Length: 115
Length: 114
Image 1 (tube, rainbow over the protein chains, first blue to last red):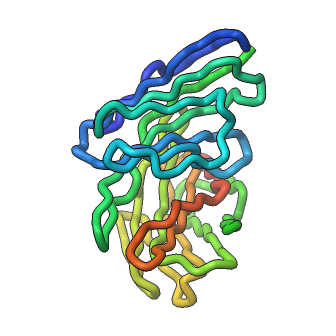
Image 2 (cartoon, helix red, strand yellow):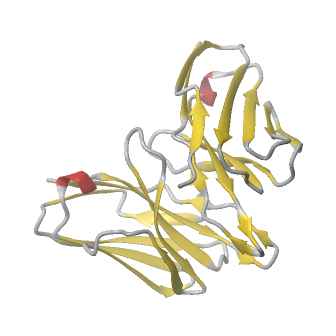
């Protein structure tokens, strides 16, 4: 069983809907990430939370809103999305420390389709 | 911005053959990682490399951190059908004690014919 759990696995939503993606990590890590994976493109980093504070926001449109209530949980709130936002959204976690970082551990993703 | 060139984009091989793929960058990295992603799943870490010239094995997989710190390769020996998937390289640079973002390649899609 993966140490990073994402729900739902699949989501279909209309452009006017509001939905949320959920991620939970069971690895005791202190950093969590949202990535977008589209066909034929490299993984795109969207947001990074370290010790529950957002440290990265890679010019992501405001229709994506992250929330990190504690070091084990991460949400991505979605509203008024566009069809081009259809993709696999991956959550990841890592342990950040001075002088050493663990590699990213990924969840299995949420396959999002915007109609 | 930093980019990784991963090649080949796809490979179709016969079971039992060896496989080689690589990543190159115009920037130097302090860490190279190799991930595998199977359909319907997230990427899973295969090998992590932290030192220039480092050669690390994980079963039939071997990866090396290039001496220039701008490239890395992954070899798979005696491929089997369960090796099918997309293999991603990722590079990371440290800036004076703080971690830069992980930069991913576009992936190499491996198909293995029994």
